Image (cartoon, rainbow, N blue to C red; front, side, top):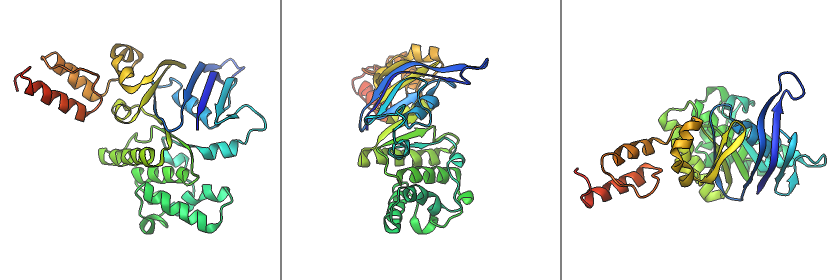
Length: 288
């Protein structure tokens, strides 16, 4: 489901003395099946931009076309659009409202006028996809869940509507390392096996470096970079100037470079780093 943004501008409290412009003539395109990282410093406009993709906001200036649907068209079916472009919020408590896990996940499919058999089938499938055992969790009280489990339920509730695009807004924030890795495993699987387009908003450069194929960097409401992950992180000085940290593995390899190690390309993950270090040692470039 392609998303095409043309000269999008947006202001909060527009027309008042407190007006604040948060997006400035943003243009971009997201293709079917991509895994795109959306990053930037705090209050850069990332979430505001992403919430235009499924018409939680509509453009004040410019246009957004989602799979041929112009979100500014008064005749546009925005309800169907939001089923096709699912949004998972950072705080699952903003998204979960039903008493039990099963009821919450089933809510979306029921709004699509599916029969009870199809609804149950979808609930079972998405619970399996996010790693929640149906028998153990279907009747579980929402408020008895851990933070990681709540995030899984929130993802499952969106997946139950069979979206073609999934927007994930900093969903690993506040999780412990185990919970974070479990959520990232779910995301990888969805992208690889279901070919869902993923738009991944994150403040973790390590997660973005590991997962995203392309990165869009937003700085003060404008696009600073829009390129492959490796090429974007190659612009380390500019990213630091914007206020973004580099992935931890890049910080380590930068230090190793000053000790004589050679890295032929921007290293994005631990596997690449270990391979390059082993090669350096094998070629005798440095002492072990």
